[in-house]
Image: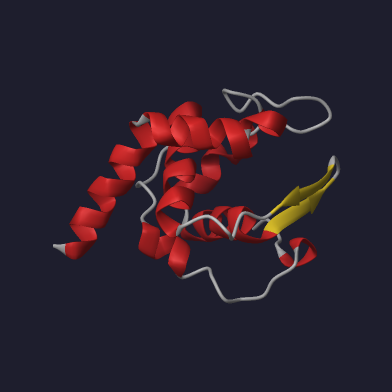
Length: 125
């Protein structure tokens, strides 16, 4: 029951104004309102298949928590955000991309915390 409530909360936040505003503050500056990318930062359409596999989902959680070093530079991590907020952001991106896969839950994000990774340590599967 608790897991279902958390899932419903995450889904509700993903479609609410709160998540869109959070997306605008944390993600859209570099990746665009629709994930299309803002030069020199990359579009996110290539991430769509990651939402459908356990390894891909874990990778996406680690990227939002710890950041990632890529060709365009360093993406910061957002570990200061709550698990619910990060799950909502990932669900918002999933919706933007029309990606397959289950919605993220706060518990899924929580499992990625405490690993003390650096952006160099987050590797795409």
